[in-house]
Image (cartoon, rainbow, N blue to C red; front, side, top):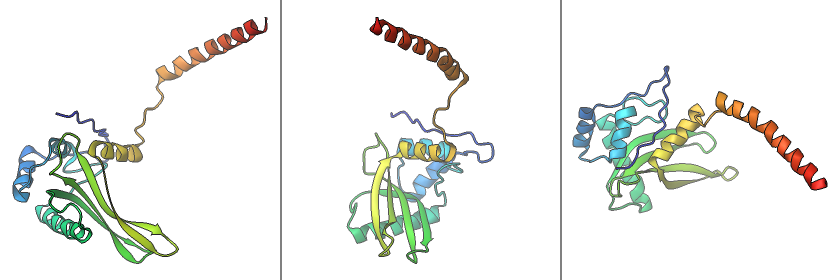
Length: 188
């Protein structure tokens, strides 16, 4: 099984809350789907509430999302025979163009579960002057996607520690002395 290296952040004001095994089994049964292990792990840790990327838990809405997604993919003749699971749907009014932009976040359950991919089908402005937009489909590693949004929201990149600073304070003078020594040696 793949290592699930999600970067979950402990935010006291917005805690991650997972779904229970029974809740996940209920969703799978009602939707007649089998979720990949990586997605189950995510749901167990942040399925009820995520401080980075929330997913829908209401079976009625999830069924509606499946239907909407299939309609949109069929218009574009995409992923015809694939088993898909849309777990997030956003609709936002784009004032510049004057229409609703849609975003579908979904998994292709027909793919190998080794490296789970998240798919995003969304509208994107392509030309502001001509009010152009396009519908775009792309996929990305699911864990990297979650970690990227964690980084954006919480700036979780490695920060300097006291040990790093002490090491630099000691190392910089030593390097300076070495450079001066080499310079003097090369002159004489």
